[in-house]
Each structure stands twice: as structure tokens, then as C-alpha cells.
Amino acid sequence: MSLEEVALFSIVQAAGWPIWPLIFCSVIALALVLERLVSLRRARIAPTGLVTEVIGVCRAGIPGPEVIDKLAANSLLGKVLAAGLRQATRTNDPELLRRAFETAGRSAAHQLERYLNALATIATAAPLLGLLGTVIGMIEIFGAQAPGSNGTNPAQLAHGISVALYNTAFGLMVAIPSLMAHRYFRSRVSGLLHDMEQAADQLLHRLVHPQLAPSQPNR
Image: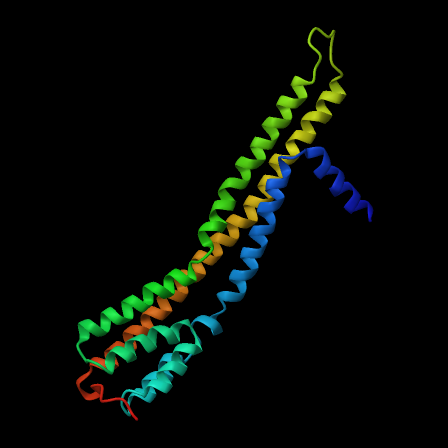
């Protein structure tokens, strides 16, 4: 082990058991951040030009079930557009079409926001866990002082307090990146949802337009 690894292990040992929940939170937060980075890629959620391609296909009529199923498997935006196309094969009522898009959009929003609440909870709870660990450490330090003793060693007391503060520092080290990641992902989700809503509106407009009224599915 390197000197840095030994020093880090010594700090963890000195901080006591309250630091272990923080270590667990840091591992969970890192896993959530990596998962969201992979899952919220634009190519996986709302590929550029997909709605234009779908509208172009719809000029010849509503595509068949095989094409719609392929569209749904393309991306999350594809699922939303496919839901509207499936409804269009049954009716061209604008209200029913809008409801189909909105229902699929709510499902997509739920999927995009998955794990963000957990990340926000870690960002909120980590400083409190660190403060709890510091308080416990301070209680142990002052409780260990022998009653009736003539005095205490100031250097030893200062060292004990600094060790107790490790928990607070580590809690902030977990909370700050988690909060920044949560804000970033929240902003990214909002942008993706806006793009998906715009795409759904474009396809809805084409489906209810008199010159582009949906026909029977191709067979």
C-alpha cells in the first residue's frame, strides 16, 4: 500500500463507525451518477432527426405495426411517438391523440427522473450524517476525560477534536458532488423532456392536419 492509502485508511479508522454510512452513501452516489450518465445520453433518449424521419414516413400514411414497434424500440422518444401512432391507427380525434402522447410522455418523464430523488436524498443527508459523526466523536472525547482530574492535555484534546471533524469533512465531500450532479441531471432531464414535447407536438400536428389525415395501417 502507498503512503496515501495508509493515511486514508488511518483516517477512516480514527473517525470511527459513523464514517461507514458516509462511505456507503458515497458508493451509492457514484453508482447513481454513472448510471444516469449512461442512461441520459441524447442518442438513447431523443436522437436528432428522429421526429423528422417519422413525419416523412407518415406522409404515405400511418405505418404498420412492425414499423411502429421498431420505432418504439429505437429510443424513449420513439416510444412516445409510437404511442401516438398506435392511437392514430384507431382514430384521428385530436383530443384522443393528445391524451395518448401525454400518457406516454408522463411514463417517459418518470423513467428519466429515476434515481434523481435518491441522489438528492444523499446530497441532503450526507452533511447531517457527517455532523452526527462529529457530535458522537465529541461526546466520546469529553466523556473519556476522567472526572476529577486536575487537567487535560490540550494537544491530545485538539487531536481528538480534529479526528471528530473528519466525519463532517467527509460528509461535505459526499454532499457537494452529489448536489452538483443532481442539479446537472435535473437540468438535462428538463431539456430532454422539452425536446420530446416539441417532437410530439410536431407529429400531432401532422396527424390531425386535414391533408395528412391518418389512413388505415399498411399491411
